[in-house]
Image 1: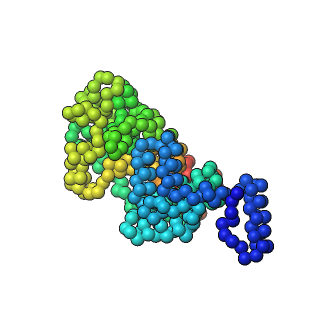
Image 2: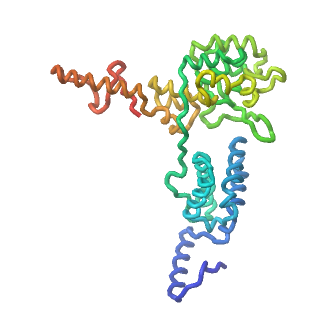
Image 3: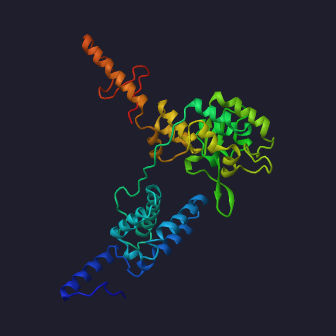
Amino acid sequence: MRNAPQTFETKRAAERWLSVTESQLMQGEWIDPERARVTLGEYAERWIIQRPGLRPRTVELYRWLLRTHIDAGLGGVELGKLSTAVIRQWRADRLAAGVSESVTAKAYRFLRAVLNTAVDEDKIMQRNPCRIRGADRENPAERPVLSVAQVFDLAGRMPDRFRALVLLAAFASLRWGEVTALRRCDVADDASWVRITRALVEVPGRGLIAGPPKSRAGVRELTLPAAIRPDVLRHLETYVGSDPMSLLFAGVRDGNAVRRPNFNQRVKWTKVVADMGLAGLHFHDLRHARNIWASKAGTSTNDLMARMGHDDMRAALIYQRATSDADERIADRLSELVDKHRDGVADTTDGDEDEPDDGDSGQPVPVG
């Protein structure tokens, strides 16, 4: 037996509520208000525990977001009392407290995922109150884009045993955890390809943990440019043991995998990039540079996704936004059409007139 959530001024109003509730029961849409009395903090912690497939780094991120940002204003609120207005105020309070838009967006997306489960699977709530337009979007600052020459310059400034690490990260578009997890068996004998099957993740209190790549598409085999194969082969011969399981990049003293803080300190990363005029450059910007190069070269979205190890095209599309190179090609093509018009020469462009052509390859010019 359940009581109505409030009293009614008239018998007719009570009967109307009862009629609506009975209809919801018959259609399987009724939500038991007692189940919605669980607090968001309790439910979110249980939500994390019940997902054993999450990567260790993801678990740590979710727990940090819950502990640092969600518990602060919403942890003690019952699910049944959450509303869009409550969520909006929580978000405004986070931003007012100096939390960045990026971190706030991450916390909001995590909160939305938790409440989606409460609505769709557990039937605790009728609808997800996370309905704030734009709250899930991050607007990070534009990262610097290295040229090929700058990547080789940076690699040359590294200790010799880490030269190949920089080149592989850039030209194979590898994440830090992927490149540091590479073993001899993951590289072709002639260095023509590299295979990504795992990644190393730093988990607080547990150290480095080997696990699967970031996404399902993260397991991949990549062809290496011929120009860097000699560097990779020399590295294998000089610094890597003969055992197929030997790490490509290991600590000098203990032979264990390289940890990012130790790497930054060992190679003096901050000073090196500052001396190059690239103060603030992150290691991940090497991967970013490779993706930009590929996009400018006309790589298709599917091929770019495969190379990056993404199963969501949104990340690939970021790199395929209009570039100055593409804009110049479009402008040049339009100038050609104007010149032909003025000379009285008919345009012989094949195909759809609305689709600009680069005039050489017969392929549409990428415009976005």
